[in-house]
Image (tube, rainbow, N blue to C red):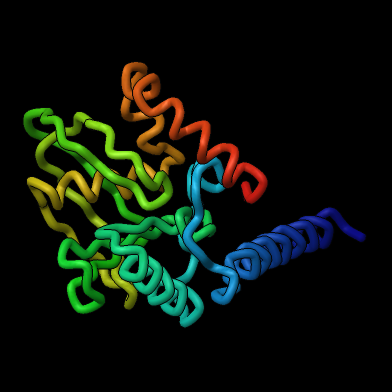
Length: 203
């Protein structure tokens, strides 16, 4: 085989491997919706950075619907994909606690700004805990909706805090880290209870 033919063949193999890797990545993102449920600390999925969504397809849209269902049934105002047991860059928010009001954020990029203020926060993955968390008062977020359309919006107040809380989950960060040393001392017993109750279910 000539050097030219070898170069062509090498290029062909590189392209095929790239296509194969892309296909495998998309297959890996196939979500079993029936297995999705609210995930509690200390599940491993809550401690790891989430992966970008490679393709917004019907499976992803079904998963988003399941996330909204879990959020509403749990009486929450926000839920990140890791909280449903899936390590993908998605979160949903509904300050009204309704499906109609739910906003979907896929592969979000968030930039906080403004004065740092303190607010009590709850988290569905940490039931019975409401630590005081300090966060910037405003955010600007850019994300994709369920149709793959990009949008950008700014938020303040409770909405801004909620967006930051859910975005934290996509970074593998939870209120356990955000509440600081004093908070961890205050809620030490509750954290231990969660470890004992859900530690065996860690994903």
